[in-house]
Image 1 (tube, rainbow, N blue to C red):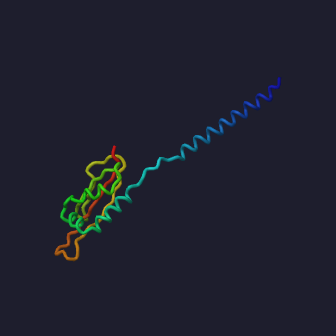
Image 2: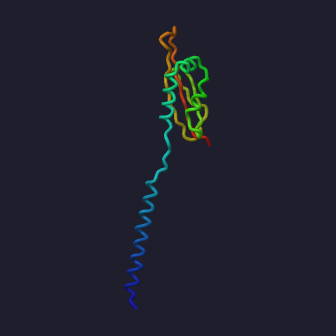
Image 3: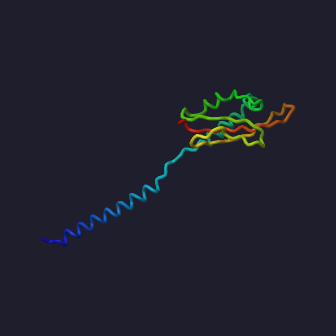
Amino acid sequence: MNKRGIMRIIEASVAILIVASVLFVTYNKNVVESIPDYSENARDILEELANDISMRKDVLDDLQDFEDFIQGKLPSHLTFEVNICDPEAVCGQSSYEGNVFSAERIISTNFDSDSFEPKKIRLFLWEKE
């Protein structure tokens, strides 16, 4: 019986297992779960809101009549919060749940307006739990 042949087969099998386990461990470290970024969606929604004269007026009057417009632009798995404040104020989200994506925009008056009172609108988006 040739014991050298069996030992070489066992050594080769162990070497293959070691190499395979090292490759498996390093591959799993490189795989990162990707989180979608909804900040671009928020900026696009605020851009559309700023270009609509009636919605601009609602923002300047601190009305929340544009929430249906925002909800219509979002996928069904997202929820949102909108804050309107003065441009120099810090207006944050009231509660934080998971990954929150935000965007802000300054809305100012039209040329035909007598007063200049710009407002900052912040839009916060997050996935429903």
